[in-house]
Image (tube, rainbow, N blue to C red; front, side, top):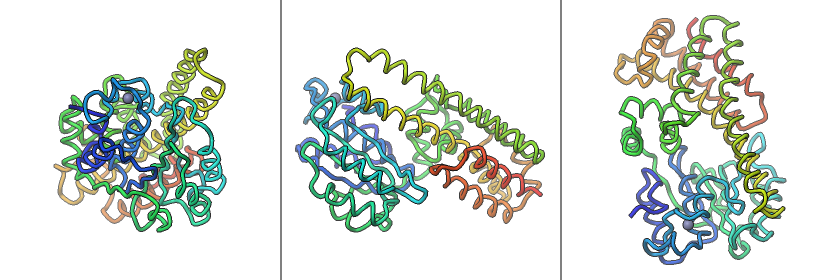
Length: 380
Ligand SMILES: [Zn+2]
């Protein structure tokens, strides 16, 4: 039967391990999920959060105390809207700030707002330097009762040993692209070509690709198509770069505005049922959610640019059958005729460097400008 762990796509061993821990009532208080980008660690973290805090007998009726994610608590957790399940990511230029760690430590000492347990999902712990990590160690070593820390990191060597040694380590595998495409097809109505496009436009995240293919998703394939069109338009002149960068920003602002309006509406509707603390919590979470949404859409712009560059390199390598963005095949062929592998590789480095800055406080417009200039520069 489908349970809350069934949606950790492409990670059967992880699902099984978390299922067993839940069934034997041995969920630990500190985990470290280790795996590359796009390996579904975040999805798994929220599923584990459900298993940790869900106290609904009906929801767990299916078997072994594993939630089916049908209760309100689980739904809230999976929608990233539960006031006691908190997500953090680095706010500093090179990683976590010490103030952020103090905030987490302080917060973990407070009572839960809604239920009787709390979960902290702390992303990119590979970007937690020695000082922030030292501040956090004691909390991680002796967490308050009824608190679970789920740390997410890209690879073992970049996570400090002092952090690693205090956690149950759960390794996530790199999901091969062909398998990812099959999973996407099985969980959406997309054919293979569309599944490949969605995977490329969502930075290899299966979960994001499936969401993108959901009918009615305003950040889906239609938005990708408009972004792609503007990217190709930008190649005409330097002036076109500046103009299209602004248009792309406008495009991605629309779904963010919609997202903000929806959150405000939901909060207003729930107003009379919520305590003051719960409202404050949800507000903070909403603000973080909004930041993540903005970042995700910026990521999509960059993933589109990168996927165009990969396609051009495929054409130049004599492998046109591997072009992912088949609906822009003509544009890709034109661009390929005007550049070389060498120029494209150099430009890709520049684009990836700009992409890395999305997390930091750099103006999104200047990041898009610089990525488009790299791509345009490669054809001269
Ligand atoms: Zn539940």
